[in-house]
Length: 545
Image (cartoon, rainbow, N blue to C red; front, side):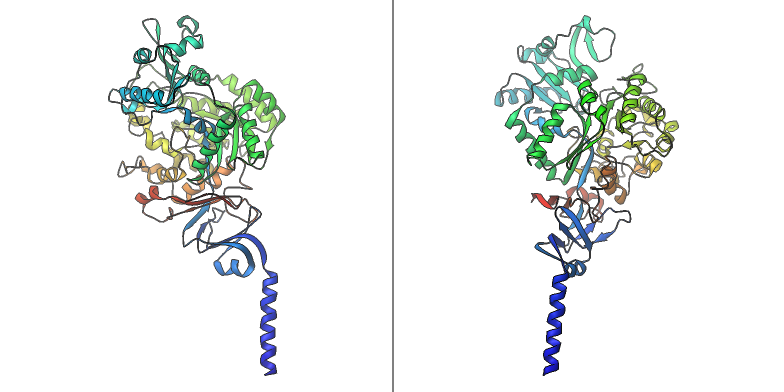
């Protein structure tokens, strides 16, 4: 009897000792399939979180035996991933879209006009703005002019932004307010003319001029728009975005939202290279806060393929004599590169056409030594001449891609480029092979915000309707592991954030997303059906279905 009591006493002491030895955690996730995206692509079933950081990972038994938490979530076998990161988007621009009429589903210019009239009736304002029109969806596939806009809205300024953001259609009322006249901008490609007058179509810098004329909401209205945009992004699993091109006022506003805990989304801010930004940010060097990083400058080398603004080495196949538009000189790009190099800033340059890509690579190579770790990026890198592919690896230049551009453009890109040149477009596997890693994004609101769709386009090279059945240039598809890394750890690395985001490892931020199906194993056609069950930032839920 005494021996039995001693045994029971010993067991109680051991149990008590074990309980005392367990580490305190705030949250335990168990019965999950946790893809860490670490160097070994390790998969666990349980994770402990404390004070917003990953505390430990392991199997259910290990985590239960070593950690205590008041909150224990049984994932029911669901897949858990590091929080998704969009390596190139326009988050602030997406937030502002609420004030724009949505023209993305218009299949004709007549439908564009119908949407505008309805929007103007429902949301009357001093300006009428719309975004998302794409003439490639229309039967004629030709650019419109502003004659009908002038008739419908003779006194109300109208600005209609093309889906790529590189072209606008405006009416005469807006042109009058701009102060532009046909004589004031002779000899350029950015303004379309007919019979000595503007047709209303403007590209590149003049498109920027008209977009910036549209008044921006302020105060509580803008705060609510930003919070709504963030919630939408959290609902698809995004926990961090790289916003490609912000000015000082916007960066200050985002910083204030973070300080007031009004915005959970981490933002990697690429500054626009105006004098205020250069003086306030670039010349003062890298600035990194818990949810805001300012260490890169966003440049533009050309326009977009859809509006024939991408600068090509040979003329457009569907418009002989047109090579596109180079929007910056090598000398001006070099001037910014020199300042950025001196201050440790990353340079991220939009370059879509093969001529623009070549120019950017050549300018970068004047400053970068082989095997550098400055991570200067070519944003989009859509068409790359075979002779230039090797420069990415030689100078450690990072191609920043958007996989859904390939599946959005594939229906008409061949007409712009011809079959031979098309083979050098959207060549993500070739680009990946140069440095062994590649960041991925959406460029939203040009594309949709979903990183799951980015994953699907990377792997299947098909659109959401499943076309083409065999995939578009499938030889340049990514594997599922590569695709996941491209929207997690590689996207973080492209923003110098890999030490605190992008993978689920002890000590890193507890940013993660739970999906209702495992995109790593389900049949390809089921990947786009995956929905977010919950999104966590710093160990706290920011979205739950």
